[in-house]
Image (tube, rainbow, N blue to C red):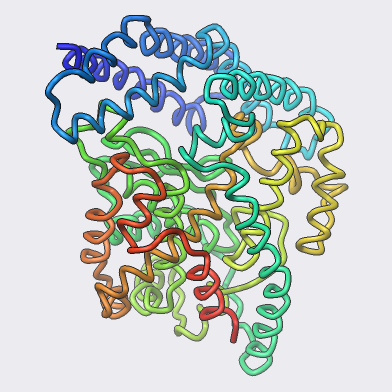
Length: 494
């Protein structure tokens, strides 16, 4: 039967995915610098093997024939997702995939070296080469998918989303935040005038921070028998559901940025570990796009990790590992600190969406050709000044070089972060209706019922539904930005 042939193909493709994912995680964490060129070649060959195997002409025949077989509703959904994957893969020839993988990996490796030196001039040619391939990819995908080039890239991360739908939502949020950021800063200043900020000690050995991170991961539900924590230049969640590799980065003079990075990536990992194992080798069993993925990571970082109830439980854990005794009133001003800053991954809940909107706007211009790489530092600086009142013109390492995404050819990914924040706030609102004592549970370190809700409504559903369908089934309504605004107002609006 053709369906069984697709099942067997899925298992072989899954094995190649596994190998590539683990090689990629190792490349970003443990590989010696001198291994970069050979690793890029190995991974480009693997990506070409995967692409050729997944796009063989008979696969289209199997998909067509399987549609005429007597399949269950779940099998029909699996076939639908396999067809969607096949169409997206056949947009690109295998030779192009190999060439782009090789270029991307070398660009990432160069980025790690040059960002540390703030060397934009050295990085610019690599980014120009990357962007040329991204534009080529976007054009090929757009021709097949009948989408605008940038929408064809977004489709790879969030099926069904397009810039025309996202842009007005972001424009409304940007307008709200430009007014709200000064108000939140004023509220913060008045609170600190009444109770000055108690400084953190500034002495946090990396190994103690690591042990704290592992303790927090286990407490919120991470299965340490199927995953690990490492160090990388940029925090990420990689690997495969049975061997999830998450990373963070440490600063010896403060611990919150690392801990929040760990919680964020643990949110991604919980989603991966919660996906249905029986469908792991089918596209149906994969996560439903990056907006949902980011909603799960931001849920852990923001709805849990920055919740005052979380810190009523977490403070003794922090004291055990880091040796400092704080009250809830000491720590919350640090956890809820609002600050205009340069770095997206360190940004607070209030300013973070402005970092994302800036990138969303710029990468549309880059993909369309309205903006060239050589002009990116000035364009970035102009928006940073307009949105956050900061200049990055003389500091590209904290400007257009700060993220790995463009070095890794991940154009179209950035909108997922703020869409995810909106979805996370909406899911928290829906969850609280079913679990009105959620805060009390968190304050006791009991995350089981909260994870059960997420497992039932999100993780176990994998790619059974489109992103809009999944949101509505989980929360009872379509995506509604009002929940995110209300969340910010309640926590930061005074």
